Each structure stands twice: as C-alpha cells, then as structure tokens.
Image (cartoon, rainbow, N blue to C red; front, side, top):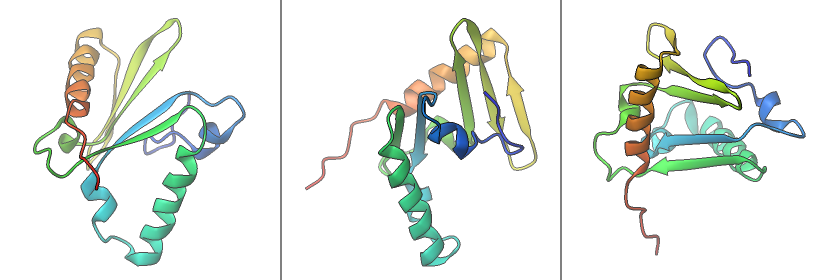
Length: 124
C-alpha cells in the first residue's frame, strides 16, 4: 500500500474494484470548523458521503462531548497487511514519521482503541 507525500492513502486506491478495508476516525470539530468557505466544506462533506457508500470504507466521528483522545496529538494512519507487521504513519505540523517497532505500534493501537471507546450520541 502506498501513501502520498502527506501520508494519505490516494483516493484511487479506495475507489478501485477490490479496495483495502479503510477506517477513518474524525474529530467532529473537523467537520464543523469553517475552513475554506461554505463551498469547500460542502464539497469535502459530499466526498466523505460518497466514500462511505463504498464497501470496505467506514468513517467514524468522535463527538465533541468526548474530551481528550489520541487523535488530538496529531493525525495517524495504521496500515495492516496480511502476513506482515503493521506500520503506523504519524503526522505532525513539521513532518511525518513511519513507526514499525512492535512496542511503539502496540502503544499506538491501544491509544487508537481508546479513542473509539466512547458512548455513541443519541440522535433525536
């Protein structure tokens, strides 16, 4: 699996006939923070809605009510491969870093798991 220079999985990989399983976890704040103007935000939300219609793609949102969580320290990507060890890509404001040490990956997977363990919001 190849990532672009920013560590993102290219859209082409997600839209091919047999895409990898992809789970994205977003902080709700990124969906409501007005960056780029209404048209840009609308297009980004439309693209997310289009992607989640595809098989093997899941997007979860951590509600604003969840206070501190692992994602607040920066974006990260966990890539798992059949028959190979996991690789983690950490993104910071300055640079990206690939982590492949088993101990570090286990720590990151634990933190990621905690970020997902919240009570779902009850919608009216």
